[in-house]
Amino acid sequence: MSGMWTVKVVGLGVVALSLSVELLGWLLHRLRPKRARTEVLFFPSEMACLEHIFAPSLPQSCCCSLPHGVETSFTRLLRCILSASSSLDVCVFAFSNMDLCKAVLKLQCRGVPIRVLCDKDYAAIHGSQIGVLRRAGICARCDLGSVYMHHKFAVVDNRLLITGSLNWTMTAVQSNKENVIVTEDPDLVGPFLKEFQRLWLHSDPAQYFHLSDPKPADKPTIPSTDKP
Ligand SMILES: [Zn+2]
Image (cartoon, rainbow, N blue to C red):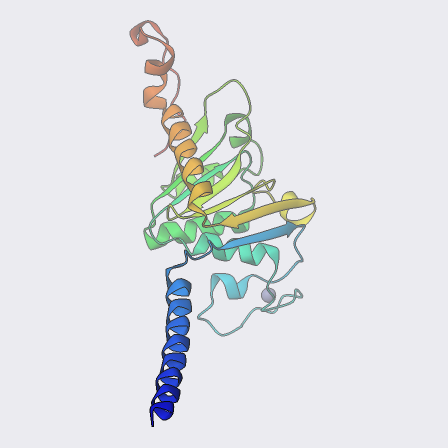
């Protein structure tokens, strides 16, 4: 009889132990910090129609010769930008790509607050979209420093960083060998947000004299580069 009890107790012990191990594994899995989303995109991107990106709810109506419904590096990049719901901060040396401009304008229509910072030498050249953005009411500033503002990054909703070698130009997207990293890693997003804020404040035309000259009244007026 005692032998039977021993077998039962040992059996129950084995079952309890295995259940405990299962439970411990499940708990560890749940408590383990989730890996931040990261994606790497390479360019030049394949050419594809962008209708399904800009008008996903509409039935396909475009008759262009490009492949339709195809995912490419560029469509991935556009999707990341269009995922913005609370903010978009763009800091790029050159911004002349009309599809990227279209994406930013679409966000503007949705009421997403947008800030664009670019290099002052590039802002006014032929093809630059900075004027288009400003006319649409988007706040776009030019870096006022004496050296190039050579960054190429954007932060979506203060949580998704897009950074790499890619300028926001047609040539960079369609011709050049470029790379872009998309990440939600807070250790990377945080410093970029901080740097954007620093550059944004430093590029505020209203602050310019205060930053560079203790006697602003003695300086001639410099036309504002910040519209609206
Ligand atoms: Zn098409």
